[in-house]
Amino acid sequence: MIKLVMCLCRRPDMTREQFQDYWINRHGPFFMKNAGDMRAKKYVQSHTVDTPLNEGMKTSRGMLPEYDGVAEVWFE
Image (cartoon, one colour):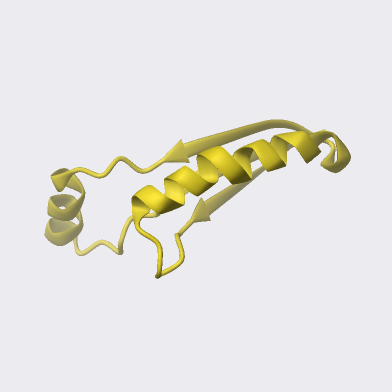
């Protein structure tokens, strides 16, 4: 089994809400419709939760901006 993990950042012209709407309602269904052609066995989206804690953690620890989401795809 091979697991592909992708850390995603939205386009600069999109809000996080726009990105999540597109990813959930357009990209996800498109991927699942074609998963068999790609021989993907499993697909998971993990979305960043927007909270004031993100900024506090990032500032206090000198971290880079958070990703907008993580996608996982499993293949045989």
